[in-house]
Length: 405
Image 1 (spheres, rainbow, N blue to C red):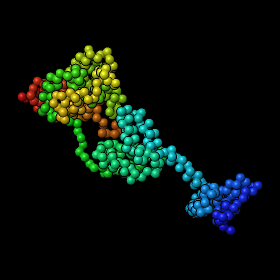
Image 2 (cartoon, rainbow, N blue to C red):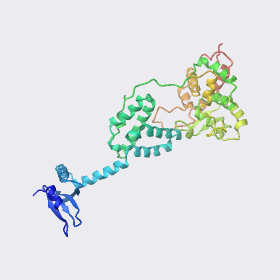
Image 3 (cartoon, rainbow, N blue to C red):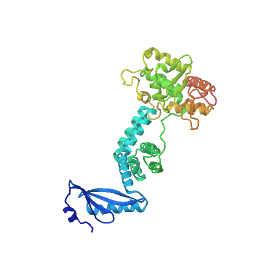
Image 4 (cartoon, one colour):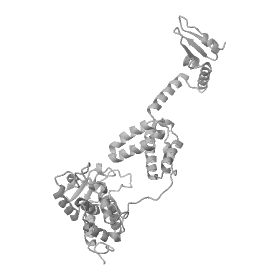
């Protein structure tokens, strides 16, 4: 006879545990303490099994029957109800441990060992500001493509398209990390193509090569800080990024070989870089040595926490010289690249000197001394070219050595 709520409430405990059947294998188990538990008895692989369905009255009669029916459905599918229940409990526990934020932080902890500290910190801050607040608490296995789309589009709608693209890229890497470890089935961020509006790539302001003579004359006449003036001239002579220059240390200079060896930790691509130093660059460094030679940093600044001049020092000097919005520290790289390509120097030699990433991903071994002889000649040619140009009103036409004007 099927159980009723009234009968269940009236069940009294006995000296020993006893059970009363409901229907289709469902029964209530009454213990001497008075506690009542639902049980489902079934046969699997020829053997009787017992599945716990919860305690009455927390689990009502109707809830217990529903749970029994779900177990019967699993049996019909050839599945073991008790094992499936245990597996589901593990999945829920794992899901709580593997939220998107938890997995993302583990991934960041691993990746940050090989990343520029500033970039790693910036990446984590972006995730905290834009992603964790929206999907951070969700189990990573439950996150869908629309969830990812919502995050990226929300950032893009604010007009920060570049930030949205970076976030989309970071999310994709995190999901790939999780999928490789069995924490999710697929990478929902991999299907976010074309969800952001296209925009023209922003380039660092850079003057036209025809304006180079005036710029060099303005740099020579500039009466600002001595370190900043030297930094501008060395940017023109070395093609390095501003951050790589201002963080330079005296220990990186090989005077005997006229070379500057920048360690991978300070390079954007995290690979060591060698800069051949022209006679003009060496002369500037020798002059700076009288000012900061006893310090660690070439561009030492007692006022800065980083112990070297700021990234904006060169930019501010260019602004004071009348080049606001027209030239930046990075512009010296673009200017050199344009002129040297026009002069016919081998693109591979120029790209290696600019420390650009090799497009051939198969060539994983990076030789910082590659094309060294060609680069040494090119750097000296360019330095000599700058000397000539700053005394003229026009740049060289054709190959170096022919000056008009």
